[in-house]
Amino acid sequence: MPPTDRQADVARWIDAAQRIVVLTGAGISTDSGIPDFRGPQGVWTRNPAAEKQSTIQNYLADKEVRKAAWRGRLEHTAWSARPNRGHDALVTLERRGKLHALITQNVDELHQIAGNSPDKVIEVHGTIRRVMCWQCGERAPMEKALARVRAGEEDPACRSCGGILKSDTISFGQALVPEVIDQAMTAAGEADLLLAIGSTLQVYPVAGAVPLAKRAGAKVVIVNAEPTGMDELADAVLRGSIGEILPAICAAPPPAH
Ligand code: NAD
Image (cartoon, rainbow, N blue to C red; front, side, top):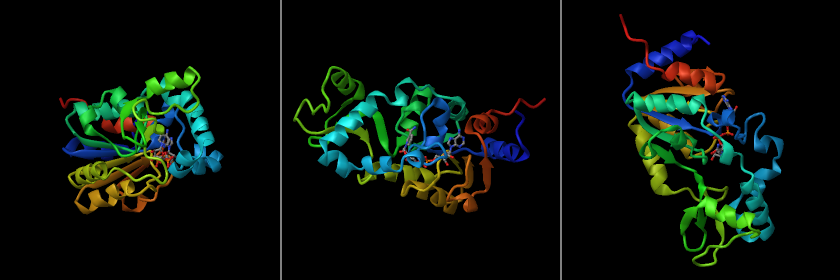
């Protein structure tokens, strides 16, 4: 599909930029088969009770909630998901030497699997590919815990201390990791262009990276299918499919003759 005029403007800004900070939300992974939470087909839009079940207090207090969570993890769409054209476009941005940091709210690691350097990716909500013991803090690969669930353990406990295991993600009611948020906000303040992709920009403090970058002088571009809470402060809003828009705006321009 040929780029629109506005996409062509953004492609020129990307060409001129040197320190692009990207902020991604669940919308970049829907084309990989992982549903978002708040979009029209989102997990919470279809089942508002699911949001309550995912609070940390319920998880820690109720073995039945944990058993259901482990059954859900076994079947998670992320295990078979592959990066899509949107993820690939951000790898292009890094290969062009333009990516300063990639802040993601996603927990699927598809940016790293696509080929972005792990040291560029700031996972503000953690990853589902690891487990963490709520008691001793030990971390281990998710795959090992899932193998125990497949073998019949309904709520596998920490091998070291017997504590409650959970995916190493930030659940509702759980504190964010201050060092990780600091790293994300520092990067946003250093951007010359901030690209927010596939997020309703409702979850703070991460959404605050957008006004922070703007105040520090960055251009702000939002790519999302629906309006977001930050559209008013953006220099450009590209409304549509991430898988179509990102390849068009991130590609290197053809060589001049
Ligand atoms: P969100 O669910 O609040 O919003 C996603 C937005 O993306 C919606 O506005 C939706 O319209 C848009 N969108 C979806 N598919 C799109 C597409 N193909 N093209 C264009 N736009 C599209 O997402 P959020 O703000 O990131 O918040 C959800 C939270 O839940 C995140 O913080 C994250 O931690 C977690 N989450 C992660 C994953 C994942 O890792 N893939 C999936 C679901 C939820």
